[in-house]
Image (cartoon, rainbow, N blue to C red; front, side, top):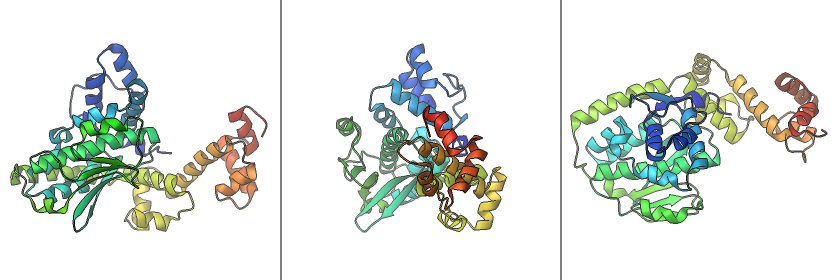
Length: 339
């Protein structure tokens, strides 16, 4: 469930780069563009697309290209390709300020993730956190691109390749042997979360391309983008992600705390986005009900309890509202068998 998340705006720069890199023939371009409703050439590099269109292209690329294509794309993303966030990172007065920009504004450029900085005594872990619900195939490719992009911006702030530090990845994909070609620091797998890890002593280093005027101008542009992303659709997308990750049992107060807004602000912004917390919970339950009813080893009562319905009769009424039929009727419709 990511109805609102898929409508979030984002730059078309990454979309265009993938088409240019891999759409060498008309057949290749068609495969990459399928279902996106976008032309092969986007004349204006500043044009915006939706996150849903970008994610559709990622899925297309996973089917059309050889495994590990995302590593080559990520390696092409030098700071300038990231627009104002890249310009701010390389023109910052110090590596610490560059990292501050990267963590504060990562969603402005790519709303599917937020970069978190865990600062320790000896090292800093830069961790990309999902901000919307992602399928595994989307997450793996996007993680490659984000980790390489983070490496590129750190190197832009340093003014040299990032040989020290390390790259941590949760699970090793089939093409794990190719990571060493693209990352400049050692890569290891099997970690709890992906991260770019750098020495803490780098924080105090001055950026060789520091420029106060460029830095301030880029930050002003990023502030404007961040204000735009504070609207109702973005917040609704984050609520969708929380419900998908933690279930519909979350009460509205817990969600508001997680999103660092008051309950009143949450309700107002969701209303501005054309929805409500109750509507988002209902949509999440509907999606989970559909998925669980396809699991024929679960009886209807088990599905009802899994969704938080103490009385299966209430679940039956919800199914009639969602699907126009009983739970058993929906199961027969989607599985072609007996309930």
